[in-house]
Image (cartoon, rainbow over the protein chains, first blue to last red):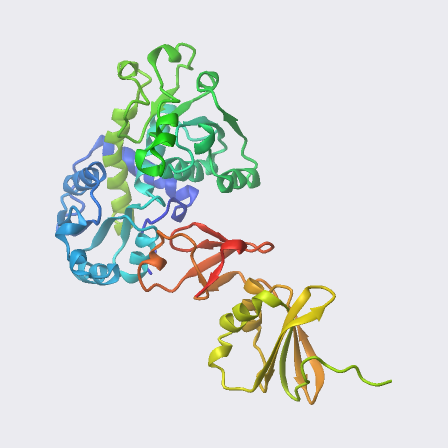
Length: 302
Length: 151
């Protein structure tokens, strides 16, 4: 197994997180640096994810690298019954770095044990999506000037949302206070609350969105995903419980910013978009800089 | 005083695994791979036990369990007691200790885990000893005692 892969956000120490954020800010100041000149990066999307793929491929292009790969499994030999192991072994012969998205959980960890070259996990089922976490951290760092001692309010699907779980793990290094706002059926799983208790990190659970907005430094909104529900009636019950509207932001702190991993459906009303506290579109742009930094760290280029 | 008659006869040399909960006998056989061992073996099941109600016992002739084999027992029968027998006498008692890592024995309970899709040897870290909770090295999901299934 190679040690430069990024499979889970827990693969990074606190120091490595800070190092990558610093690198990301260098790329933001100067995005076009031909550090990947002469290198080939494989972009293997075993399930489609246009947003993540375009972000990674933009990062690779801005670094002057070449890309090989596929955008969904139907255009790969997976349809012929090839195992993940064999696909990775083959691509590992061609490329210097492998970016992969896979619907099966743990696929990226397994690939990192099979491949000689580093693996960057671009999402493995409901498990991890560490480059998303790094761009979230970079967005928080940029807007607050620090990661330390912040009030982070997480809203929506806290049960199945992998982005909130990874963000919780990563922020745990920086003395946060968490506020969880979720309907009964979508609350933060016990395992994560236990993790916070062990680390003495305070958290509060709320059922009303209004009561926490004034406390938050970061308001992290998430989408309630239809595909998580076996019973469509359950989905109908909870999908509209938390909708953020501009009028609700009157008492928010000046430094407060609204984040969302996107795509949104209706959980943030479009009337919020013009509010200077809305940060979700800039957040997406930060993804390119964060991914440039992650790629360079994996290849030891900077 | 007459010696109390044993429900399962004594062995001369080997290992006795006693105090196995009756419903865990086959899990113990499985986890230790005893089905493939050629040594003589006597098995007792549904024997009376003051502690467990009904217990099972395994006596294996001329086989002495190693520590890592003993630790595998912690996953299925933490109450088990191991006696090493030489010349009909107990010469050593081994304690069952929960290992830090569990590899290739337990199935991950997450149906979406790579280990349930491809031929990958399972690996877990033990995150809690009693009751046992395992964290999958691959999908990072937890498998607890109630959902533990042996491979």
